[in-house]
Structure formats: C-alpha cells, structure tokens
Length: 171
Image 1: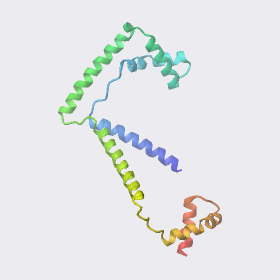
Image 2 (image 1 turned 90 degrees about the vertical axis):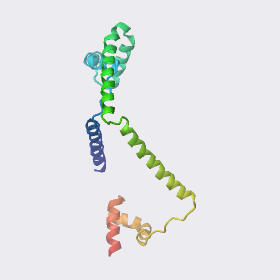
Image 3 (image 1 turned 180 degrees about the vertical axis):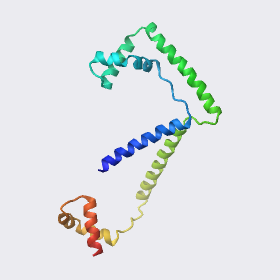
Image 4 (image 1 turned 90 degrees about the horizontal axis):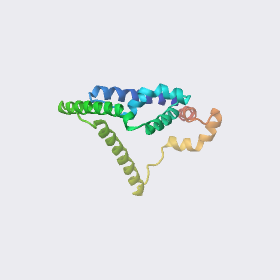
C-alpha cells in the first residue's frame, strides 16, 4: 500500500516538474543530429532488430549511426544546427524577458545543500558527546513489552503493535 502511494507520489512529482518546465516559458533544448536520425528511423530499426525494446533498438541505431558516412549524416546535422540556432535565439529572448536559465538546477542544489547541512549538524551533535534525551515513560514501556505485545497482536508490524501498545498504555 505504501509502495503504491510512493509510486503515485513519484508520478505526481514528475508531472508537476514537467508542467513547471512548460510554465516557465524556457525553450526546450533541440534534438541532436543523432536523435533526429533516431526519430526518423526508429520504426525501421525496430523492425530490423526484431524488438521494440529501447536497449536493443538503441544499440543497433548507434551502430548504424557510426557506420554512416559524413554525407549521409549531413541532412541530420544541418537540421540539428538549424534547430540549435532557433533554440539559441529563443533562449536570448527568454533571458531578455527576465527568464532565468538554470533556475531549477539552482533550486535542486539548494535542497541538496540543505540536506548536507542537516546531516553535518546531526553528525556534529553526535560527535560533541552531548547526551541524548532520555526515553519517555511510554517508550520505556514499549521497549520492555514489545515482544509480548507483538505476540498478542499476532504480528510484528509497527502499526499493529503500536496501536495495541497505545491501547494498553492508556488502559
């Protein structure tokens, strides 16, 4: 159940990131010559490979791309260069209108830094030798009676044991 919730949350997060990226107005990076080649020839390569699985198709496409001559690659490279120029122009307009490129990367970096600071603070607290807070009466009761409560509950799962222990503690 919890795993399903995590999967749903991950999907929602991914969707929110995608929508935020679109809403920011920042232009998307253009495809490279290889990706243009792939998008144009994916179906034929998948038929040739006998599978539509990404690793199989990608490996065969990579081999074909490497084997192509410069003349064969030229139309894809020209299209990629054209798209890149359009992207750079759109990016300049985005910056001129007050957009910030790399904003999401900076936000991710700040979150990562905050996590690292929190971890360092926790380690410093441990290293300082400061004694930990003593356990409360309820936690002492739980540590002494956990096995008996788990046996009575018929399960060692934390929510089940915790609920029964809470009822016994209140009684």
